[in-house]
Image (cartoon, rainbow, N blue to C red; front, side, top):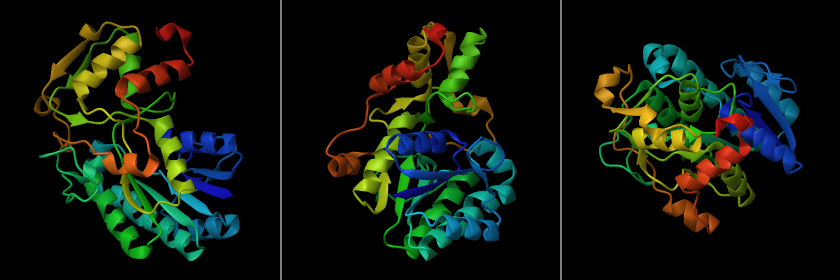
Length: 294
């Protein structure tokens, strides 16, 4: 079976491509600004380029993890965020539907306002930020477009990726340099292993699951607790991490504070739960290429 991964140079896309190749799928991946050998350049804002690529490739499955995901940058550049995250995503969804490919769209817990989380799939979205709003608009479009779509909402994705600025990489980089880490003690969410996210996504494709599903780590923790547990997993003192209120961080975009995702529906579909944070951290350390981290 042939899969197209749009955004294969990003954290989630890289993990998907690696997994699919190990599983002997025929895979084509794309990049936008970060060129990687073996991937094809694509700007999803270019509708004709999207059409040409998908019609030529003729994939059975189209994964779209590509997005402008820097939440504060999106807040400061809303037009660019909408052009990539909404218009670009719609170009991909339309063409996937046109060629009869199953479309998998990766969304976020930031579609919720974080007043009463964790949230289930049927809870009413209410994004606080431009980024969350762009993701919700595509969700709504995809639901109208095709009954066979799959929307995967996830949260706080982390893993080893030297090109990524995911939270684990930020914490490790600062601690290794001897720089103290501050983390919000009032933001709640589900840290999610990028490799488990890829594995579960493929399992859902194999089962031909459609609709909206939450795929996230089992544990609901604060950013502060997550950072302390990362520090300990990397062999640093958890005391190197200091708590701070979100309001003191002066972040441009509002964050959902009591956020997070419920995953009971996923457990019913898969017949198993996702990893606990401790399990995910052990897995991360086993995959980490730097033996001096511990």
